[in-house]
Image (cartoon, rainbow, N blue to C red; front, side, top):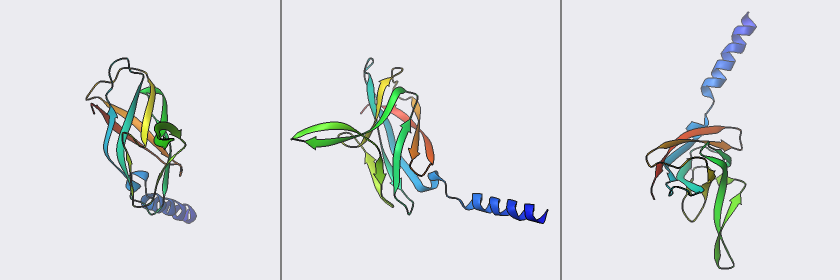
Length: 142
């Protein structure tokens, strides 16, 4: 009985002291770009501050607003700007990653339904450390 009490106490202490991803990451200004009806794709932008002492990697984004969600970056190649799918977004400790037009962003490919300005859509951000964060992002004209 004493062993069980000690084990449960240690488990409760470790859970209480464990830092969650919402303690490590601060999201500001999230927005999904409003696009005209019939447009197949849209993009998501936001600022992501890594408040932890470790570097973080976003490896996947999930949402039910499109058939596919990808991490994208815009690169200059032979004097031309080209959008490319990337495997991850790196966020160094105590720094901010800005997802913005003409740079890193979330790409929503093959929208399932037309986007309505003012609606909020759920998006789940997955990190390499196995943690995830679900947020609601408003649809706005940019």
